[in-house]
Amino acid sequence: NAGVMQNPRHLVRRRGQEARLRCSPMKGHSHVYWYRQLPEEGLKFMVYLQKENIIDESGMPKERFSAEFPKEGPSILRIQQVVRGDSAAYFCASSPSNPTYYGYTFGSGTRLTVV
Amino acid sequence: AQTVTQSQPEMSVQEAETVTLSCTYDTSESDYYLFWYKQPPSRQMILVIRQEAYKQQNATENRFSVNFQKAAKSFSLKISDSQLGDAAMYFCAYRESNYQLIWGAGTKLIIKP
Picture 1 (cartoon, rainbow over the protein chains, first blue to last red):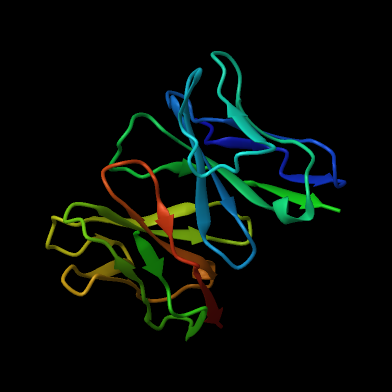
Picture 2: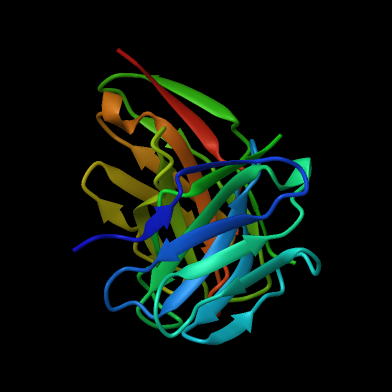
């Protein structure tokens, strides 16, 4: 039973390029959450999605960032025209339902480096 | 706004000894959940232990236990018989009835052999 799969594990982008981060939730999980971890900090909530629906994107920057969770395939976090400040670890978590007592299952994250 | 504070950026402990990591939080809610997560160098975020605020009994998972003081808004993690594999960043997190986790800045735990 594979856990939450995130790829790529490491991603290097030049300023101005686009970054696409993928997250496949655990089998049977239909809720996906994206968090960002800046160096020396805890995680910060970005967006919560269910299949084909964005439930809460209050933590996501209004510009350049978007997320989707299509009916088929992984959830995608897209960052357009990346800047140095976007360098961070991006974590995806999934749960079978909301709210859940059991916490979330996290992926191993994607470390984005903008050069 | 809810906040979570971990006042110890780094802690070290001798192997087989006991160590306590501190966490305080600020909330006006009475019903919520608290979590400790471990993040080893692999970066995987692993759930260590969880506590429901309405439960007075402190949660325990093998060598890991918490001291939950609701009135003081304190949620410390005690690791007994520390092992080399316990070396990691430890994060305290808070959640209300919704889905957002509010995280502390983390404590780096070093185990001395």
